[in-house]
Length: 326
Image (cartoon, rainbow, N blue to C red):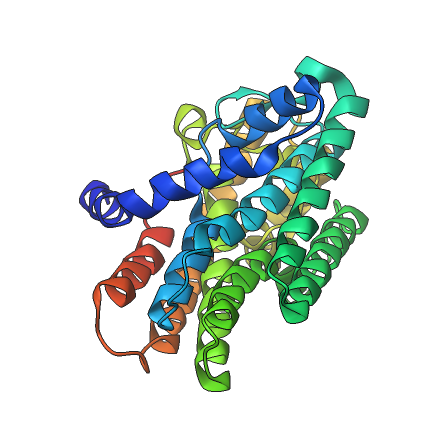
């Protein structure tokens, strides 16, 4: 996994540096306080996977312009805005290994800076002069909001099924990754076939990405993950490892799992007990297998493109999605 990460970072080093510079140039807020909060969330360890995917998708579709980095930052702005808002909604205390923004600047300022980043997202999309791109970004923003609301409505819903879980993660996570890949193709004036291929790649990659996130919430080390493990359970979120294991548990164990879910794993011992059940009743293995299947589909989605360094990098990114530890 380490070797694959180093390979990806080496291949994407130049693009990532340019994306970083574009992020700084694109902000330009009027108030210093807005800059402080925005910089705290934007430059505090983000992986830049979404803007990088847009840049690589455009390149794979033979983009010939020089504005791709400036456009790609809208995906990081939108992602950062949702993190600011979600941390407040979820009552989170750690993000990327550091205190969450609202614990420093309090809720009102944090919410408004999130709104500022949403506005920067749409203004960046408008600067492309492409109505289709603006439409994709506004629809994506709406879908992400609905996905979060859908998840809130299903907290501690012990009879939630896999289909509903898939719909939630499609909206709250996958649609942004899918949009990044699709916009890259549109920016390159790709054919309909290639645009769909990139969109499908982004969809499958996004599904796998969220499934792995849901696994790591139970299995990763807090210091590596950058946030408290078990936070999904404590927030009452029903994710795939829990849904699958709960459906396969027997009477007494199932009842005990339901008690832990409804109690939101108030103790570390309850969280460890739940982790044992997730392993015993196949929740962890099933989720990992489903993520792997979506990664394989993602790699198949770009099979129509000629072999090149960019295609290899997108393939490596897909493989890294299911091997990452953070």
